[in-house]
Image (cartoon, rainbow, N blue to C red; front, top):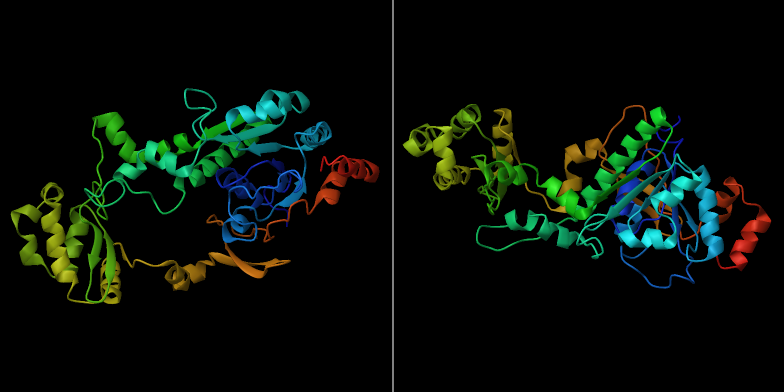
Length: 391
């Protein structure tokens, strides 16, 4: 079966995580994503993004082919331009000035191929007072407001346990590229699509951000409680913990019936949704006292049966042992030539009837000869590029 994006050729100049995350969205749906790296004797540093054979690198670069090009060498840059002639998309996450210094900015690419789409991810935007600053996920988490609302009240700012700015910048860039591809069907011309870690992080603040833009409220840390919905939080049971998320009078009625706290719920502080919002500590104390009387498994069963969203709190090994996670097949095996069988995490998007490709991350320059030949390079030209140390 032809995959949805199998007709799209992507030149991947990305590194670390945000850019590779963007390209992975396209590769997972069949786009021919060609990962371009500098030759090993040119780029001797390990760089960032983790060890090549480690989980991070193997996760973000799967389903791609790999070639080497020295873009600082005139012959390497000339070879890249020949690839651009036949490509649909180029993705990079250099600092804004780097692509222009290399001669691969949007205007230069569009002059070669007007249909090309350039996807760019930076730390703080393509221009402005911080444009030339180096970008890093944790910096964006702090500047975007996420760290200020994460953690227990009074604890001080806390970093989130995943690189959320990197990941979401990659996702937003992929969405922009797909949007530009759709538009190109009508106009015949490509576009420059760009986002940044800072823009992605502010956008991901969502209702927390609009609490400020619309009402002038500065959100605070609320720990495991939901910032605005009561009751929502983490509670102890007789043998562990349970996550409970509910709001509104109907959901509260179900909680009261299931926990058999009719008498306690009659208190004025718990009688209405507005009262419960103003008296979160009292609500939590009543729930906590009752939830301690039974086990996590029993409460999850009883509350979900009553239609109250409730769940466990898992460590990562427990996540993949869960029967629903296993049913969904959220991990899948890949055969790596050196690592053997490894398990990666699949895309969360399902499209019935379409099987995503399951190819391991390529070695540096693994597909040099094959890819260059497909783009029209002769054996003699490839040999000359190799002799010049341009590939």
